[in-house]
Image 1: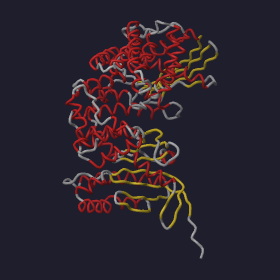
Image 2: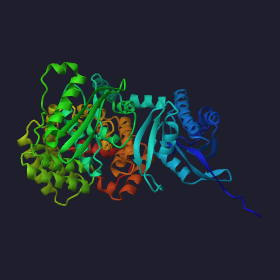
Image 3: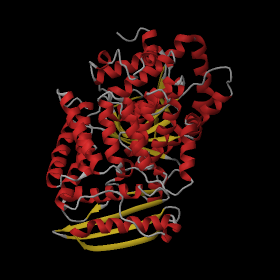
Image 4: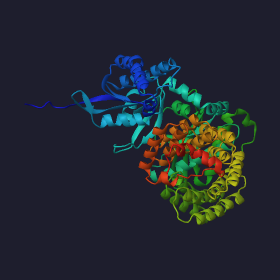
Length: 592
């Protein structure tokens, strides 16, 4: 007897899962099964049939569907989410049923009507990355559909997922219904965005290194970052933060799309060619509304003229964005720069790894900043960054000598402030050391000073908001943190901002909002124990016990000792507020 040979084919796979299924079954098993059966018949199955899908299998809390094309699969996924929103609205007496959906395009093995293989596994993992009510797709699907469908795609970066060897690039699609829900949840954030949008914002993209030497990337990146700092001191318009605009490095995307994602009206892009002491810097300012260049210039200069070029670029941009500024004399940067170009070069090299959240990156930056201050002992920015690195050593557990790091951090940051008391960077760096020295009030005072000196400094806005919550001014803190997310919408470490917001909303008694922000943080860093733990904390407050237990299990999988170390976490100086923070998990016996 000849065995039937399994077939292989390329398919688009849709994996869907009901959010909170275990809790729903625990609350009302019969009612839940009846509602899900009704949901499928009225809102889901018609959409599958309409888009030519084949139901491969049904699980209690989900389903696997195969399509002949990625466009059909994505169209079906979005249609299901929108159909479910309408179905939920027609069930006013019951809590809504929400799906997460993942879509992948890949090679599958077909046997007895079932499908197997990495293509199927990845679809399931993408479903786990989706926000409730949204669709998450793979890079292959994105390439196939993004030019052919009128949908909003959100790049969430490369994600490490279980049982898949390499990190996967993923994109979220928000349906109209899901976007409306998110907007309702984030009313405060929308208000902040509206206030800022009244003034035209500018984003500076990483400058292209045209020198033919990848080792010179640090120089072109550093030039763009210096321009961001200089522009941010103009109070007449907001400037998108460095970490957000730099998330587009190496990507070739339409300017209008970048501007839309960053909330910017103007985009500055350019290139740098460096040969010995000669520089060629090209820069152009683009009005994203029209797609036209409103200003472009090429500078052929000697290295010693670099700071004059930076001043000229920032002044030209300011005069373009706010025309009345042309009536004022062009000014030099408010930052007290070094006159030593070698010291500045070391500073740029230090900045190349400063934003790495690793001990190795921090140590490399410290060595560069030490070289910079050795060449120019009056270089305030280099002292500030060096002191900040000592605080990061404590934050990332890079040293056993906590007290020694704090001492050296204070020495460096106080030196920075003494050299330039008008530097927002110096004050935020000093405030960061105060925080790790457990001097919260002093840390807050320095953050507020930094924000007063530079209202566009997104990190200072977040730090001030976080610290306002820590000292009991939670409403002010939430407003400031949400404003920081508007100024810095694509920062790779914005998950940390969202985690702080989640804690503040717990303190304010708004547990649904807290859970929403914590879940967003998890979506950005599902591999990191901290957002998982914070998400579990919010779920405990909402009495979603099984989901909280699952989040804690994921947290332990990422770091086996994390939950035990944080079982008596005291984020607040006030013991009562700290006790309340963990009360949800402890009430349900989920912490040791």
